[in-house]
Image 1 (cartoon, one colour):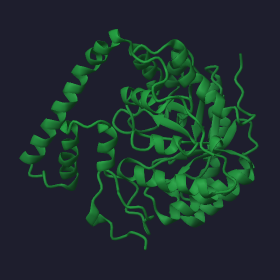
Image 2: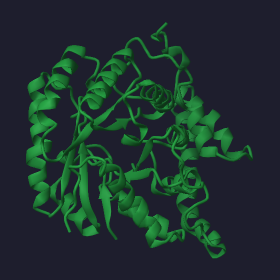
Image 3: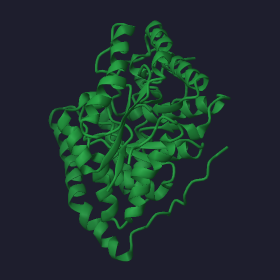
Image 4: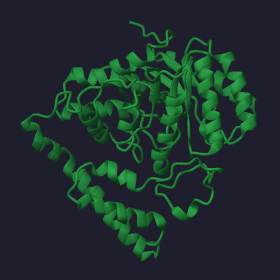
Length: 110
Length: 268
């Protein structure tokens, strides 16, 4: 049985006075992260590594940032996720890489 | 402020971290069994580890007046060795009667393989057989969405599993509703570079509800912050959430879930 849960707008939501505070508190740190993304993309081009599948995936996912639609964090996570549904027959190593590579999946279970 | 650290790998931390956590308001810490950073070579390695988190670590925490609880399993990162997993699973019942053991965890998937699923199902069977709470690890990064779907489907198809006695940890924006909508508890892990940041965690609380969610730092030997939970309280307060709201998420929620195990008791 599915359990009920609190309203998605429950808790004490920010008051009108807090609207500006949300921006004030986060803008500079987020600005810094955006510049880090830009610098990373410049860097991998300088090092001729922009074709790495992870960099390709990052550029693709970044398009979501400015598409004007909500749930950007969820959709970027989905964009970077393995879309398959079957368990893998064998492991490809202990560590995930951060982006899914289609060509790395010959091990899919039938 | 009071809070519970419901998922901390304290064997990886210094005593300074215990001191800092207690100073910040931590009133209990729970330690799931996890990967040591290398594969253990035999069941005896696990026996020593289980002794560490059921005997030694509670004594170390007690020096700081901090109740310490533990969860037992073989971590999915070591689940490819089915023979070793079978040996560890056979040993776990010896430790289930330890006074600080709350259940089976953190079980789950790492790379979403067939062998990991076999061992996960064996752990679930064990938990059901011994009426234990279940703490589930979900995979990292690109593997999380697929792994969480597999885990949720496996748990929902098991006739002995009660969703309200299972917490599925390390949820992010793309998995939190998948977990909550199926009746499970969800854990948000606060990491500096992966999983969730404090602002994102509060976003999820605001958009997905907060009555079946706990927050944890999962502080281990990697890049992690044992004070991530109280730092998230600051993020909540800065957005205008009340002290009662913070207390519910960081203290009352973990107490409500963990109290389903009668061994979870806090002192005055």
